[in-house]
Length: 252
Image (cartoon, rainbow, N blue to C red; front, top):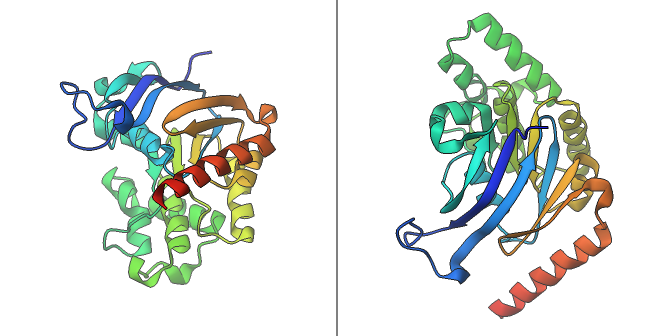
């Protein structure tokens, strides 16, 4: 089976020194030689301690940055051969702290559909579908981000992404600001979607229920790539806790 998304020995280092002409010191790599495949329709959880590189990986997959080394492929086409706008229409990222860019909720959800030239009637139908499925109250539609909590903005941002029907959806800590009921609803909704979905999360219970596969990052390296039923969740939780304790001690 051909992978829909493939990473081949990708490395990344933040900062100005991270150029292909000047390699950074070993300790400054954020991600180091990651290789993995993601197949169409898979749900993949990316887990690890804070600072493991989860968000950086999502940014590379959305091409907000490029790997210092290695190559990413979409349907076996190298990322650099795909126009950035086209790639981001196929692979959409919902960040941990989404912005509405001064728009109202309604304007933000409709924006990308208007850019595509979709008829207004179809835009309204699509928007109505997703605000209902995500339980977004209609009295939010005229609000701006200053009038909303982070959890509320996350739900709007997910709706904004899903109206576009991307091939691949990337979600960065989507449950952080949601109560248990909202988390359960989001889990059910995501589980019904046909899209390939990658979620960076520190909520291991959510990852266990949501994912087909789990990628475990530790200090920028991929140390486990397992089917969900193969994961020893107690061991995983302990490994993450140990890394976070060690890193906390380094700051003391």
